[in-house]
Amino acid sequence: MFTGIITERGRVDSLVLRPETDSAVLTFSAPATGKDLDLGGSIAVNGVCLTAVAVDGEHVSVDVMGETLVRTTTGELAEGMDVNLERCVPAGGRLDGHVVQGHVDGVGSLLEREDRGEWERLRFAVPPALARYIAEKGSIAVDGVSLTVTAVSPAGTAGQAWFEVGLIPTTLAETGLGAKQVGDKVNLEVDVLAKYAERLLAFAGNAAGTAATAAAAEGGAR
Image (cartoon, rainbow, N blue to C red):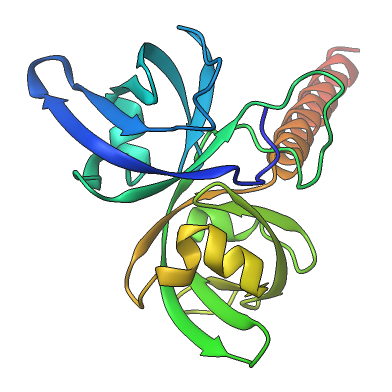
């Protein structure tokens, strides 16, 4: 588990795609975040939870499977690009952001950015299937950064679904979000609690329907 508090900006050394196995190997520098990282340890790269398969000094290599390449921006990384890094939170550690699994749900893009003097307003496009999980004053991870949602597009309206966040100078400077241009893509992870709540309600509805059907059948058999 992660908290969405970026500890370091690493730099991509290489991304080697392996089409024959529908996978890739990503290597990046992580001077601080990779310290004491063991083989098999977890590290979030732009919000994607990945497993270290090689550690050479300050350089870390991770395997990336096809599902991750499809659902995230990882496959678009290239040598020299900077990435947000975070190690998993230790037991008893501070939860300064929110519960982030590192399981990216989809890719959004920057629609607008507005300089408000001491902070900036950013509006991101969100895939329609994810919009229902995003609520005003709720939490969302954007490229691994824990952020508070300040506004959302109205439910049920036609057109592009979106959400907005406000970023303070520290967040702008210490994550990649300060350099994002309109049209740039970002990894999105919505609140896991919302997804579980929807899943539980779906099963509850099915159970109620099954019970009603069984009761009707029993009544008809009398």
